[in-house]
Length: 399
Length: 72
Image 1 (cartoon, rainbow over the protein chains, first blue to last red):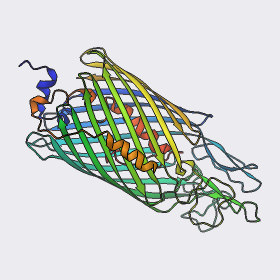
Image 2: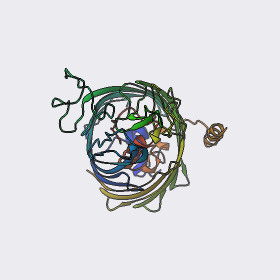
Image 3: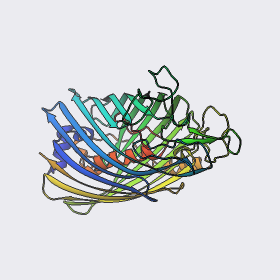
Image 4: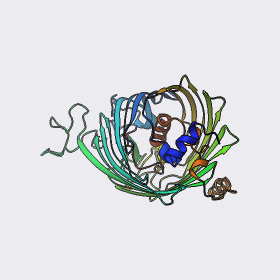
C-alpha cells in the first residue's frame, strides 16, 4: 500500500488531534472591520508563532493590535456637553434624551502565550496566559487545559479546562453630573485627585470570571468526528458597561440620565456540539451548534455551517453561514420612559432580543510547501439594524 | 417553539452518525487541514470570536483561553 503525506503523518502522530500541533509556523494577519451608520471601525494586524521544542513541547505566542474608531449608540441628552475619547461621556442631565451614536477612539493591545506539554501516551497539558489592554480596561487571563485519550487507537479523548480572568475597568460616572466620589477623596465629587487624570475616570472597578469547560472528542469513522463540550462561565464584580446610560423617571421632575446598572454576578451554562465530515475527497462540512443560558434571563442558540473545498493541491475555497439568536436580559429596556428606580437597568442593545446572520467566504492559496496566503470576507447583520463587514487577509509560513 | 425547531435541526445533522474503531493508518482524511474543528485559519476564527464577543451577549463554548475587552 502506498502511503501519502497525510497517511504518514497520521500514523506517526497516531491522531489527527496531535497533528494540529506538530508543526512550526509564523502567521501574519490583518482584519478590517466596519459597521454601518459610521459606527465602529477596527483595523487589527496580528502575528502568531507556533514552535515545537522536541516532540513533547510546543510554545505558541500571538499578539494583536486593534485601532478602534467610530461611535456606539447610547442615550444622550439633547442639550448635553459631549466629549470624545476612550470614554467619551454625556455629563448633562437636562432637556430631552435621544439614543444616538457617541464617538470614541481607542487602541487595544492583546497577547497570549500557550505552552503545551505532550506526554508519553500523547495526552496534552496546555497552560496559558493572556493579556488585553485598552485605555480604560485591562484584562489578564490564566488558563489550563488537559486532554486525555481514553483508548489506544486515540479515537476518543476527553478534555477539561479552566481559566480565570481578572479585569480592571476605569469608570467615569454620569451620575452627579459627571462627578463621582473618588476612592481616595475626602469630599464627594471629582477633583484634582481623580483616580486617572488622563481619562478623567473617578474610580477603578474590578471583575473576575471563571470559565470551566468539559468535553469529549469522538472519531466516528474514517471521515467524520464529533465534539461535545459543556461549559460554565461564572462572573462577579463590576459587570456594568461603563459606556452605557439609561433614562430614569422620564417626564417627571426627577428625570435623569444616569449610568446603566447590571447585577454584580452572572452565571452562565451551555453546551457546544461540533461535527465535521468529509464529502468525497475534497469537501469538508463543519456543523456547529451552541446553546447558552444565564441568570440574566438571556438564552441563546447559535447554529453555524462551514464548508471547505480543496479545488486543487494549492487552492482551497471556504464558505459559511451562521445564525445567532438571543433573548433579552431581564433588566433591559430600550425606552426612555420605562425605568424609574430599578436597581438594575440597561438600554444596551447587546442585551436586547435579536437575531443575527453571518455570511462568509474565503480563499486559501498555497504558493509553496512552506508559504500560503488567505483572503476572506464576512457580512454580519443583526435584527437591531447593525450591519458589519469583515475583510481578513494573511500569510502563513511553515518552517 | 423556535428553540425546539432549531435544536431539532441541529440534531438532525448528526443523524446517521455511527461509531467505528478507526485505526491510525485509516486517519488520512481526518488529518486533512480542512478537517479541523477550528477551521483552516486560526487567526480568522479569533477575529470572529472577538467580534461576536463584543456584539452579542452569549459567550463560552470555544475553549478556556483568551481574554476579554472593554468593548464599546
